[in-house]
Image (cartoon, rainbow, N blue to C red; front, top):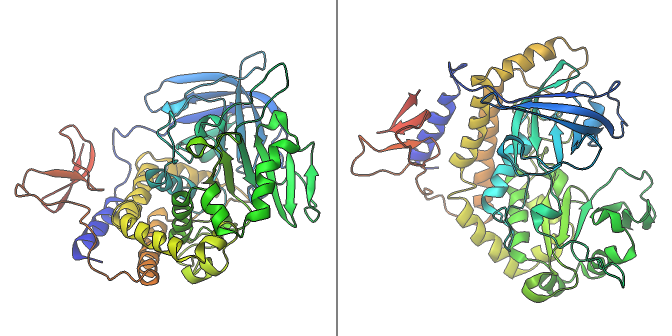
Length: 475
């Protein structure tokens, strides 16, 4: 690592010694009301939501709520929920909450197994920065969720920091709707989610729950996320065909986007995302199963639930410097389809290496990843949200996973990523020459100002800047 990069990391680390800054806008506040007590197997119940943003603007809507997750269901003191916005008569209601895209279905992620309450959001932010869809959408080719942190109240009781996220769905991925006609309905776009809790016994292949679930092979179950209202064998045909050919590299090259598979593979390697490498926590989508033009019938892979990233694990028990040591070589040797077939091929191996050489200097650089972690750490402290959550947790008999010192924990995770970065360099045979400077120098050092992630700072920028090698807080 170059001396300049080490200095930038030091600046980022020192930035989080700040306490609550006067005038910092608060986190948005989400208050939901629903009948009764939230329980582990709660199906959708009708209620309401009231969301107040950083500027004090409020939106109130009817909504229905359902508990979600797998391991997360074991933390009822901080439940994760699906939220579907509704009109008073129960019909769907789209809304652009907190400036995010307009939709009716949202996730209220409690992050109850994540000690730092940000792994999923940080990693999706990073994924979105480099792994766009290989075709146009009205959302700039985004292939992952976006979200914002809020402080949550349920039935007037405080529940700590949550993240309000949008969903992976047909509209985001620009999948073609079912075409209806007098001669019948034609399925076009499809969206499959790998992994399900909808059926307990997954030993026997077959279709279940009125064709909304398919166990393709032993303990490899998929949900039909779209078109769920047209669940039938026809909708599963592309997935079944893939499983008949999933070990054939020529087939994969023809029916997937290799660049998408390369990005996903590097993503898992860089952040050791164990829950997203086997038979769960990813989506397959096809824009139009009936059209081969412009690769419209090719499969795209999208990640889901990134809580096990950055050295974490599925139940939050890796923390305090004790993080996942899942080696890159083990990731490669344990790859499941379609990645297992790809990783045997020299072409794919070369693509991985070239992509790492590119991403290590920018989106996956140590400074870039550290900046994203410290940005949210600063946000939690500067708004006072972290302290309020700690005070609330202190009163609980049973607690979600959490660290007592967020600053220290983030520092150790940044160190973990520095080690991971070096391991990736060794794996791909990259020499340790310095990566491109995150903060660029100019002949006019005294007046040029940059944000801590290396972008030029405008005259009205408020926050931490770097000028002439020094950190300055602009209020």
